[in-house]
Image (cartoon, rainbow over all chains, first blue to last red; front, side):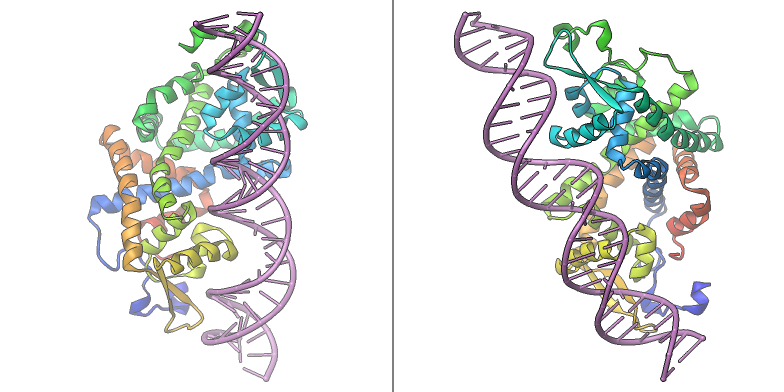
Length: 178
Length: 178
DNA sequence: TGAGATATGTCAACATGGCTGACATAAAAA
DNA sequence: TTTTTATGTCAGCCATGTTGACATATCTCA
């Protein structure tokens, strides 16, 4: 044990509870927040590892995901979902187009617009990235019991800024992109 | 409405369900995953905005949080929690020490070690950053009902890699740092 | 029709926060 | 005394965000 080889003196404490004990509810809240930090880290770890092999990053995954889920999405719509600048998106999009994962089609009604689609290889990439992530979440929800999914959705939606909740709900359920 | 000024032709669809409808459970799974993405984004947004005013970033918040929660933590222990390199940590730690938010104390038993503590100004910073984040999570859990907290913890813990679950549980509940 | 607004792209520069590799020092452990 | 450990530091690279400025094609409206 670390504490046998390395006993701490009283001025070197590391336990969370040493200095001034927190109220139980505050303590519980902090624990759930730390859990979210650790859970999110592992949640993104599987795709991250796979992307590295392709010379891509998390940003590419996000684009591939949302283009896959909203075929024909325009650049402006994608920007509004990702909330990044067009310059940031341009870099990622260029990589994906060069690697033939994404293609752009000029709009027929509005020829200024570029409608984004996954190619076959993009679809394949998206699926491969999704597999371990889906497995992880599906397992976690099963383990947590039958009510878990509904509760989970309620909490997550409540974490979203109030002004954007309906937009997020519309978006994820299938709806128009803002 | 966007769709009145901008009707889409049939080859420019953006709805998620257009091409090939997914099985209901798969569809629900994807929705929960997207929700996690949006929720996490807003979850970190309040501290991010405050940090910017101080010229600090998210990385500094993580250090201030874990040093605050584990006073006297050593550099090696902090590295193992954050899972970053010592060079990355050195940069943010230097900023925090320069700004007098964190101080280092040479170990009494092992004089190679540096035990990290928040200064009064560090404690103040940590609390200010925590307030909106705690409020957001507390509200979300309340809104989701009395069972929400327990379910939430179950799910988040199950999202963590299996090998590390017990370590994470020990860490967040108050325990020794690995 | 012509002026202005809009959708997209691109160049350049910068910040943050990861990373690797190499090397230095002090102190503990063997 | 030698080796290992805990920490620090220099230098450089990479991914991904940012701002500002400007170009082009196309649509919209008066």
